Length: 305
Length: 264
Image (cartoon, rainbow over the protein chains, first blue to last red):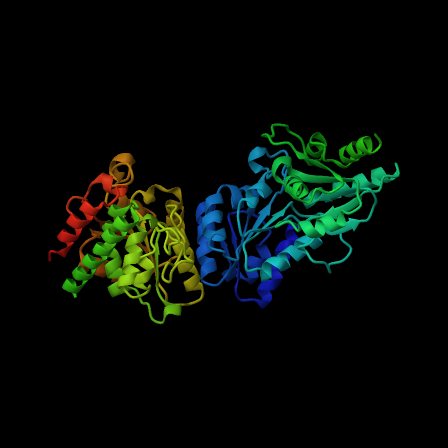
């Protein structure tokens, strides 16, 4: 996802004068080719995130379309107030590209996890937030950002994820039906999509065929479209590699209260709390109940009661 | 010219007193402190024609917004009528800067340690675009305790931003005490020099010294003008008094202050 996103931006540089990339000393190897071809459109602003974001805001005000690349804590947490005041408050078309969504970097430790970034982004008016599930969604999110007049935040996992979508001709701002199904729907965003797909394969053997819906744009949430897709269902489950208390599960809960639909809602994800467990990504997903087997197990148990 | 500027700055100070009294808003001392700096900038230094290619002034210590609004009005950039809605219900201008409220408010600011860095980004952008536009940013001495200032200081010199000038309004009185007593503030000038900046130290109410400092060309280096000022400058009972960071200007205060400012 990471490389697809960045390559889409680099391709745009070939035809646009205004695109500029700022890194906060992150992404070794990602920009090697870019730096050689477009040395005047790239700047490493070092380990100084407050300056990085305010500087970006100023650069944006002179007419550049600026991308800021860093791991998520350093585009959104360390410099939250700069993002709030200098980018969002001033309505600047800056794109923050955050790498290492959720617990991608397990077991690097809590400082490197991004399990509350969507919650934080929700508190930022004017911000459009994307959490692509595969390289195709990442590419379309990149294209959206290139033409956006608003601030954009894109949370990406890493590189090397396979494609889930079969075509590239969809509206990235809308929820996407990945697999049709009956009675049950699973809504997800980000790289956990692969676990959800595998969970469906497991459930298939028991004759359970949930609908799968990817939500690449997590803010603002397109509730109307989503609820149309959820008509006539009995149960909706959100699965995300994010704190349950502030991700799409919680956003959907708010929509749920307004719409009062017939279906039940369950939210799977990471419970809020500092993570001290030391496991690789698969182990961590298993631990938090969001691996393919744990998702399938959860659904099978409840669906067959 | 000297007399004219002193007259202009006196008028701006009067407007600040009127605004502070009408609005019952704080920061009158902070606003009076930087009037002479703004007067020199707006009446003798900034290139404002054509407007779309103007030099940029950023009030990073945006709690002194009354000073900026009054100067913009005196310079004819904003309509004086806008001042009537300063800090009022259904008003026009907030106590800290919102760039969507008035022409000439270049950035939204109010939290310290942001405007300086946005200015660096703008200066870099103008250089990239090969535009001959300069950026000036006024920071406070209290503001200079923000880590972001020193992050920016590290990169401003590296990037050779000689189209960028920071002015430190060094009145040595922040919200709750003296900058020099609160932290290891001094030596300020050599700190900036060590960061690779061209640093000059002058009297911040000396119009000629300010003009000279602004006009000095510093090839390849950003500039900081450490301007020694007096908080509350121009009104005897406010000068160098801590309370006037927050105190409200009553009708009585206003009367006394305007009387003093009427004396030439």
